[in-house]
Image (cartoon, rainbow, N blue to C red):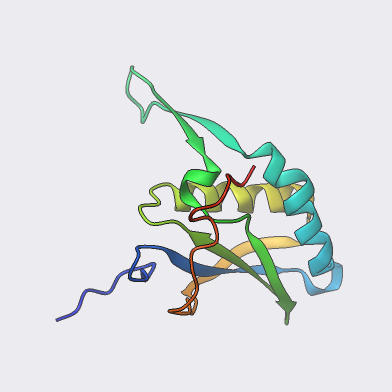
Length: 142
C-alpha cells in the first residue's frame, strides 16, 4: 500500500501546491493586483516571522521563521476564475512550516482584500521532473 502524502514530494523533496481560496466574484480584485501586493507588501514584510507559542502552558516557545528556508519563491497568484483564486506555493526540501506560512498569507490577503473568503481546497500541482528548484545554487530570495 502506498502512502497518501500531502504535499506530494518530488524526488529531491521539493513540492508545489495550489491553494484555492473563495472570492466574492462581485468585488474580486484583479489577479495582477493580488500578485503586486504579494510582491511589494506581503513578501518584504514576511522575510522573517517571530512566532511565539505557549500552547496554554505557563512557558512559551519562541521560533524565528525565515520564509526563504521553506520556499523557493514568493507565492504566486495563478488565476482568478469563477469566484476562486488559485495561489501557488513552491516549497523546498524539508520545508517544515509551510502550512503556518500559508495561514499567514491567507490572513494577510483577507485583511488587504475584503473579497477574499475561506480556503476552499489545496491540491498538489505538477512539478516537472526536469525543473530544477529555482533557489538551488543561487543567491537568497530576499
